[in-house]
Amino acid sequence: MNAARAIEIPVTGIDLMVKSPRLADYRFIEANERPGLANHELQPTAERFVDLLFPLSIPQASREARRK
Image 1 (cartoon, rainbow, N blue to C red):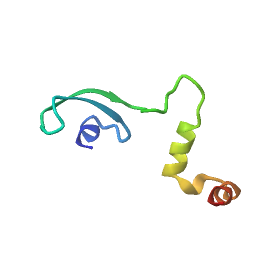
Image 2: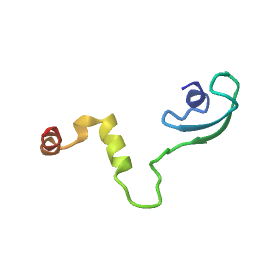
Image 3: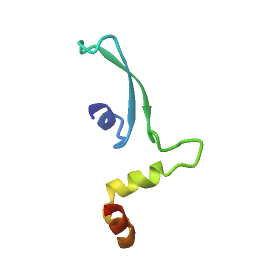
Image 4: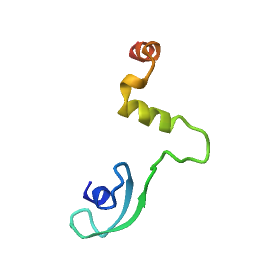
């Protein structure tokens, strides 16, 4: 979260190089502004992400169908 705040990108995928999971020593090597949302093939990933952030933007009939 601190890395995303430092580069001022609220939703980001951060790639790290880690020597060991037991050590705090790591290197920030890449940040992806649209992680998993900019795929080469059409997928509903972005739409589902927006629905997650703004559930009331989903039409009422669709929300009811998802509950079943």
